Amino acid sequence: MKVTKICCIGAGYVGGPTMAVIAKKNPNIKVTIVDINEERIAAWNDKDLSKLPIYEPGLAEIVEETRGKNLFFTTAIDEAIAESEMIFISVNTPTKTYGKGKGMAADLKFVELCARNIADVATTDKIVVEKSTLPVRTAQAIKSILHNTGSDVKFEILSNPEFLAEGTAIEDLLDPDRVLIGGESKDAIESLANVYGSWVPQERILRTNVWSSELSKLTANAFLAQRISSINAISELCEHTEANVNEVAKAIGMDSRIGSKFLNASIGFGGSCFQKDILNLVYIARSYGLNQVADYWEQVIILNDHQKRRFSDNLISTLYNTVSGKKIAMLGWAFKKDTNDTRESAAIYVADHLLNEQANIAVYDPKVNDKKVQNDLNYLDTRTKEENADLVTSFDDPYETTKDAHAIAIMTEWDEFKTYDWKKIYSQMKKPAFIFDGRNILDKTEMEAIGFEYSSIGK
Ligand code: NAD
Ligand code: UGA
Picture 1: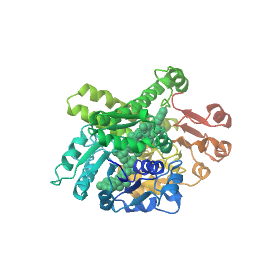
Picture 2: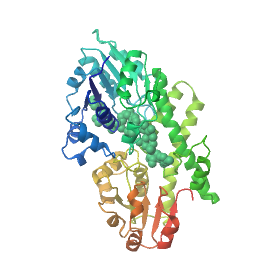
Picture 3: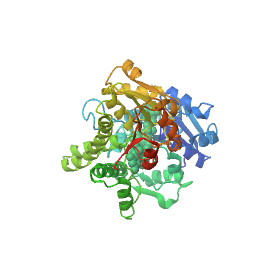
Picture 4: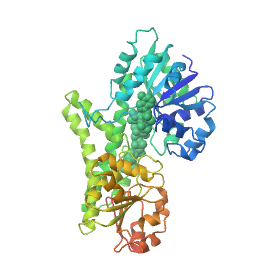
């Protein structure tokens, strides 16, 4: 099938950047991104590109180049589905918060709604592409909904998981390690391969069966998260043995079989996907009775929770076992640098723990506003909105944030944190002035020379 019009359902962190790049690289294809969230669509259409709902380096430039030419954002979902030959499903697949599989399984209600929407509206043949991360064998459910419409419209279902990382999404999309397409119909697979073929070399476009493609996505995230939990486990051992986790990471990373990437010890991984996808993998394994497999992967999450907890425990015990009434300045709230995404950010859990100990928290993040910080804490439902608003204040300026603070906790590895006037920050803080560097981005010797009591991860 020759694709001239694409519709993407879901204008989020994946749908937005991915379709922007597809539109840029395929000027002859009309790409329409739809969403039920009117506010989000309005923000995507905002003339002021700094108001786009997602911050990603390089994204605004591509949106500026393509929007209104062959890239469109709209809430007119049915129209976009009806006119397109290829429909990407790129909606959220969060962990279930109710019923069977609560806290473990992926909630597929949004995906199912999309499938039903497509089934209701389609009058011409469609290729439906699973872009969301889905449990293995989800394509079967989508197929069953689409093939039972009673009409003679033909649907082909492909799995095309996304591997971009936030903060580097545009780079990752423009130069992907691989594009994975799983499907049964060769024609449908080649139609999608042609879309990517505009800029991705054919040898990097992998064709597999649908189930391998679905499972590869969960497996990739599980392996990546496992590396972080592995190095974080070693970081705790380093703290007890005078080994230095950076030196250990460098030494093992030079073994080409291990590789040097993804070995940064930290306060624990965050983000919307690692935890959700591993929990989902664990759930699937258990549902097949594979308890050893499930326990193995579950440990990655257990270790990650431990790493977040021990960061805040260490902060409290170093501050003479109490943070009650003390000002703790948190630098960074996003789950990593170069994104405004805060989903599952370690900062939220560390803050929550410190708030239980009656700390006053000051937050500065270059891309996250107070509303988001408050929403993240309110979502945990640990205390009232009023209490959160009373105890947590966000600032626009790092120097105001850290003024009169008893301690600074570095939660995100934003580059700008390294360039601050740390002498000035020190002079404005309560003494002794503590820094807890959850990202190992500052220089211990330099910080101690200024006068800080400095501690980091795994040293
Ligand atoms: P997101 O929450 O940012 O975006 C999803 C969007 O879908 C929301 O704007 C929501 O309003 C919309 N939506 C939900 N139901 C809808 C419906 N029925 N009709 C129209 N719109 C609907 O999520 P995301 O981060 O873009 O993730 C999407 C999927 O991609 C998930 O499965 C995720 O696991 C996967 N993924 C995410 C990343 C990432 O870095 N965020 C990377 C790879 C894969
Ligand atoms: C991750 C994967 O890297 C992507 O390939 C995948 O497509 C995506 O999940 C997804 O499916 O959503 P993302 O979560 O956006 O991407 O960002 P990462 O760079 O993987 O970072 C995740 C978390 O791990 C962050 O909190 C980061 O700070 C932390 N991290 C990362 C470490 O603590 N140490 C590291 O060495 C690397």
